[in-house]
Length: 489
Image 1 (tube, rainbow, N blue to C red):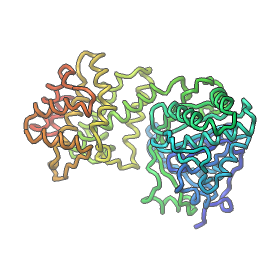
Image 2: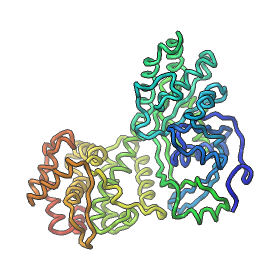
Image 3: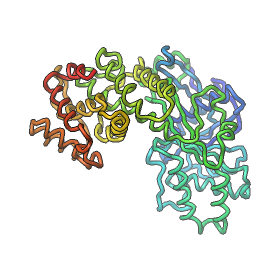
Image 4: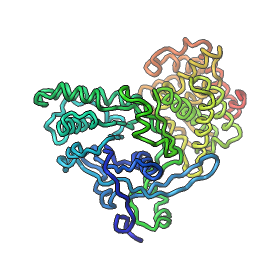
């Protein structure tokens, strides 16, 4: 079997126009796949330079394959099974700024560079006042980016057309807003290091650089350990950087305040390439849609499925009773709380169910159960409140899901003898243990709903919620999960 490199496989050549902070599975399966598609289907004609954001990473391994690798997309699209392999060839090179700092800063001097894309984990977008301008490089990602931006400002004397379009992909709401604020903090911290160019640099960044907030959505399991032998036989290469992801993808890019949607579309023609990339006025409604219609159902289906004897999300979707419950929560309850056009919501919700039903991924429901109470607070509680406000009564499915979580946290065993092992913050675990020791569902319901350290309020004040939680807890205890579930369908 051949090694994978540019001597054994063809590799395209294009100007380096994108700096990418991060070499991990997600960016290679999502962003670099998108760039590859744009190069093939439009005149985007761009290659990516990867910058390793931390000292220890994978750039050496990536460079060992001349930055060639395969993406294996699996799942369902429009009802059809997908299992496709694509060789990605749009990464020109990969740098470690800790050992190649001058090469890293020299990227700022390349006139063709236009985009900066990143995924440095949720903790990556943070201001560290310990960073110094003279560090080689600054330890934080925003610090490195500020160093790079100042080098570019100096190199091109503040030319307006040499500003950069910056699109972070870290999984935090309004990621671009947070990144922009961090950069301003570094500009203030280092203003004495700029040699009288502080005002000019700050104004150039404000007026000529474009920082977007974005929302990314693709499940990326990563390196396919159990499938790698079969994949390497299919591609006929010894590729050690294969990355596996689901077929679905979505990227919502909020236009920066100093650039129009039309101008951003012209510079980044992903929509023209037929990709599910939406450039919008605001990412907020799409963030709410994802959290509500993907993460929200996940949070409540998991305890219901597990306590019904079901271990895999796909099997829960296809179960006669649990599948109806998921549909009820998704379409009849959570969807009714959002403010996007109903046809858009129905399409997204249907896509989510198709993703849940991925035939290639055995997604364990127990993996979703970690920290269920905080997840319910952010993903489902807002919908419960909005539904009550709009409809005048509580959403039975969402309330039942909370009762299922409370029951799961009782611990013990399922009917088939499988251990029930909840995992959450110590104070939550202690609370549930103490409440269930009373063996009184009224006390349990009131105690959980009164826990302001979880909910930041007393949920007993929501009309009817305490009584309905107690009723569901009693039903689950008396009838078992499946029979209790049938009473609300």
